[in-house]
Amino acid sequence: MTTPHPTPVDLLRFNTSGSVDDGKSTLIGRLLYDSKSLMEDQLEALQRSADLTGNGQINLANLTDGLRAEREQGITIDVAYRYFATPRRKFIIADTPGHVQYTRNMVTGASSANLSIVLVDARQGVVEQSRRHTCIASLLRVPHLVVCVNKMDLVDWSEERFLEIRDEFEGFLPRLDIKDVKFIPVSALNGDNVVDASPRTPWYPGPPLLGHLETVHLGSDWNLTDLRMPVQWVNRPNNPKNAALHDFRGLSGQLAGGIVRVGQKVMVLPAGFTSTVKEIWTLDGALQEAFCPQSVTLVLADDLDVSRGDMVVDPEDLPGIGSELHAKICWLHPKPLQPGRRYLLKHTTQTVQAAVTSIDHRIDMTTLEQEPGAAALAMNDVGSIRLRTARPLVYDGFAANRQTGSFILIEPGSNATVGAGMLFPPLEPARPEYEDFTI
Image (cartoon, rainbow, N blue to C red; front, side):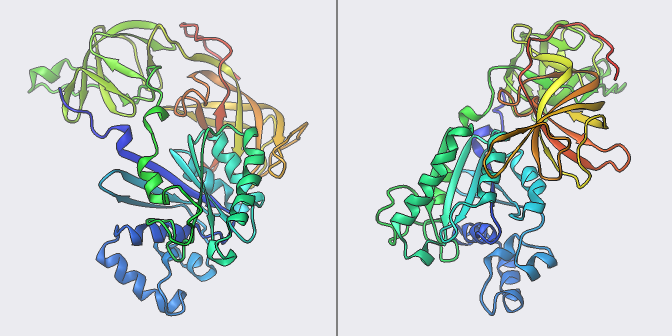
């Protein structure tokens, strides 16, 4: 049997967030620089840009702030991705902007993250963007949170100041659903507690940031219980020169949850047809079993009517199905969300027409309280809405599965992504029969 590669634990995706000028880009630059994860050409480019943007000194923020406007203004505008590895783990970093007008970019960067780093300026303390980004990380069900209290060198490495900020965070964390939270005092500019432990914080007993990133437990972040595989395409090579491929018919897609094994009974929704798994194929060859997030091709024992957007599940563990949906949404577009508007809704591998029927409430990012009766949601607002889709979706609650419980809304005319949604759990399991729903 071919060994699955890569396993979920091999790779940690994380994003940085926080308010403007809290040091997010500098932290990532320091992480890459001190861990010796930069190529020679990157170091040379960093040195060449020093005279332009760093007053003759290397500006580590330039490793992620690649746009000319970002370097001129000293801010992050777009999401920047960087990749590096240590002997213990591989990493994908998303450096997200701190400006409130770019909150939608933070949503993009955190949507696939296993861990979110929220930076707090030790001088300024917890501000609205600190709470906003922590709230969004909670809404997106990011399993792990690290609060880096940055610029500790500017408050004389005061343990008292560090504890004040920690206590303020812990005051509102119970209202959010984040179970694993770590607080680390750092100086991104000088490198204290970023890659190596700092002698300036003898009162801090924990590991530096990189040490925590290398050891945080990720195995339980994936839903390995509920089998979910949205069908991306029906694989029919139909090669007359190869007898093995002439009659081949497989269902290709990425496992969004659970484990699938040869001989296992499965159901295809929404039609409700059942069969057994005859073969499991990957690019590396045949497997006896596979697990999320692997991309596989399943060959079933029976020829079923299956198409893109259908979902392969365990008949003993059904998701929900329906066209009346309840969701939380982060609104990403300058044109406000108003009830009655029609959009395209992309969920897993299918896109359907949808209409927003009502807005339940808006979340005040300052107090994290719900404000009922909102007539619209403006750009960067977070709220709860109800939708109706042109045909039923097979879905889970976002808390149970981030892949089958999420969606985006697309404006039909411009094709712009206008909202990112997280579905509430279905009221009852799927009823395996197809019905034609219309708006």
